[in-house]
Amino acid sequence: IPRLDYTEMAIPGSHKEKQHRFRPVAALFDRDKAHAAGAEFTSEGGHIVCKGRRFKNGFMIKRIHISSLIVDGITPSLKELQKYNMTLDSAESQTISQKIEYSFSVGDIVQVVEGELVNLIGVITSISDTIASVQPKNSEIKESQQFGLHELIKYFKVGDQAKIIRGQFKDESGLVVRVENEQIVLLSDISIKERYVLSRDIQLCHEKCVGYDDSGQFTIHDFVQIDSQTVGVVVGIESDAIFVLDQFSKVNKTKPQNLVKKHLYGGMFIDQFGNRVLAGETLRVVDGH
Image 1: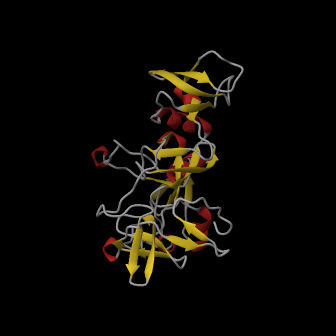
Image 2: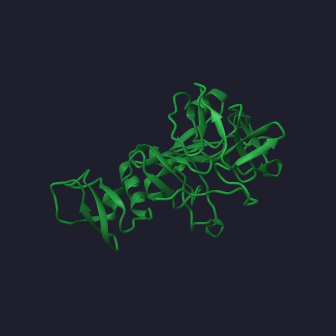
Image 3: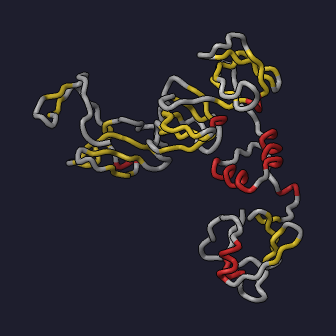
């Protein structure tokens, strides 16, 4: 995916890539933007040629020595896959899909997406090479069925607790808040942010991932003191920052060294009706998110 400065490409005699103070955004080649900037381009055998650079379906074609490529352990992001899928025809997409590494395990709940039993939901009972035995759930079919792994996707529903098993957010867990075909949206237990992942990159789990800051001192829901007048609860953790919800309903971003961990013993507070609330009592949220 190229980073193009169409204004620079429109300058006559400019064929070399210019060193920019700010890197252009990575995006597919856009004919309209090139035309608006005055950059000339031509079509040659299914390719677009502009300033000596060749493009196909918006991607830039470059010759690179094979020794310069890293091909092991690469997991494309969801956005990258979506960009490739938008530009591929069905035959090319099928070829790439067949090369995707499947990550099914015995006990996974799956949904059939191809064949006569499409939409059938069941549990994997065994896997042999590229064939999985699936025991149907809530179906008139009682006998175990066999499917190719390419005919299955992992099945999740809103409210499931899941763990990310590979990719940028590996080992984070979260609550499934939205399901869109193979795209799953998790609300991370660590950062309280939405994570967009593919169903093949997560698995069901029964425990939340407990995340700590780099010092190993603070974790989610810890009670901390920010200064002499401000206390709060840790609601998010990043590599070098902690997010604290204080008693004024404000989220503060600060560094771990600026916080003091506090220990609560008993305690009480007053609800909106003036009632005393003690530790261990059940509450009902009546306002807010």
